[in-house]
Amino acid sequence: MMSAPTVKDHLIYSLRRAGKYNRFEQIQPAAILWPDKNRGWEPVIPLLQSELPELLVYGQYQPDQKVGPAIWLKSA
Image (cartoon, rainbow, N blue to C red; front, side):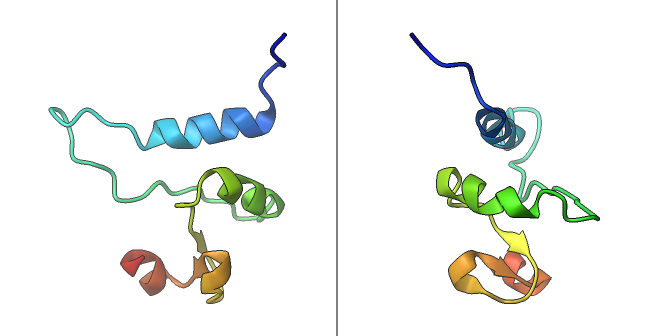
């Protein structure tokens, strides 16, 4: 018996889906932005990064945590 998808499963699916595109209609997205003014989702980022190693976060430079300022994010 399969278990029901979790909120984490839905988030990961949605983030992966956001990066999908039709190459005949548009160019590949360079980034998916997730504005979170109040930083309410910040505690779940490590959980998401375990499934999405390409997930980068804007903030103080901590490359081992995949966190950095805008210029670092752009170059990464």
